[in-house]
Length: 68
Image 1 (cartoon, rainbow, N blue to C red):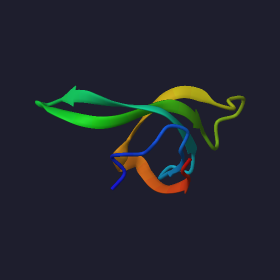
Image 2: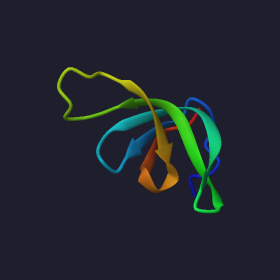
Image 3: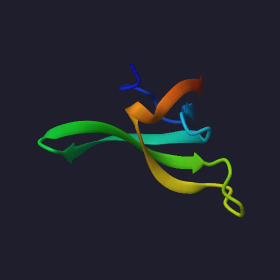
């Protein structure tokens, strides 16, 4: 469902944070390629952190906020 998101898509994560997609990569885990997005995560509940570079797996996505 979330395997083909375009660059600069904003997504809502299951943990309440927001993630801005920069690119999609395939990571190799346990003998299989797993889709993963690289980008900026805007977390909730972490004091002193506005955003940081992170990765997001498709099973962590709750919904799409805005797709460009």
